[in-house]
Amino acid sequence: MWQLSDETLKQLIQYHKPNPYIVITGCSRSGTQYIAKALYVLGFKIGHWNVLGEQGISSDLVAPWKLIDDCLILHQVRDPLKQIGSMQTSQAYTWAYIGDILKFNNESLLLKCMKYWYLWNKMTEKRAKFTYRLEDIDNVWTKLLTVVGTGDPDTPLPTVSKESNSRTGMYTPVTWEMLDTEDTELCGQIKELSEHYGY
Image (cartoon, rainbow, N blue to C red):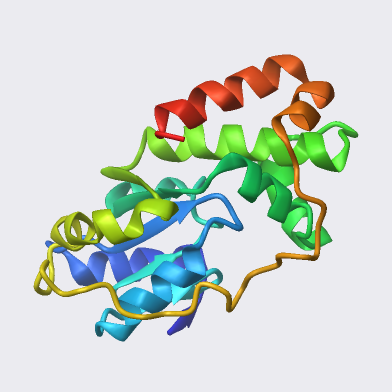
């Protein structure tokens, strides 16, 4: 495992050619740790967040990186109300990183969470080979393994706790009414994109 950096990622991409380096990405608080653990149990050397694995990384941080265009990008999405609610617990350094990219302008925390879910997923989807819902992981597991291209696609999904990084109870759940009150136009865009994803 290596600390996430441009140079190390570039070296790993080159090392794996002609096989692609695996990048699972999307928004923070969308289950990237869970999927990294599930693949790791099967023997995939997948890192998480700011740690690069030999075969890949599951992290929201790399979504805007130009370098990942040379990787196999899988886009994992989560129900917007659940992700936006959970995102309210994110630390200042997380928002500083996101803000450098999305250029916030004194928005409320809820509005930043809304913009993040919408813009980060739009950015990631157009670069990804495969977009799937975290909530559908039981049904898409075989396809995910097929897309990754290594191992037996009939291997069952490992039993991995979905609560290890849960922040349930640490934030006030959000509703569509709350999102609409915050920004009606953006709420409509989030609804439209979430319906596109099958929510």
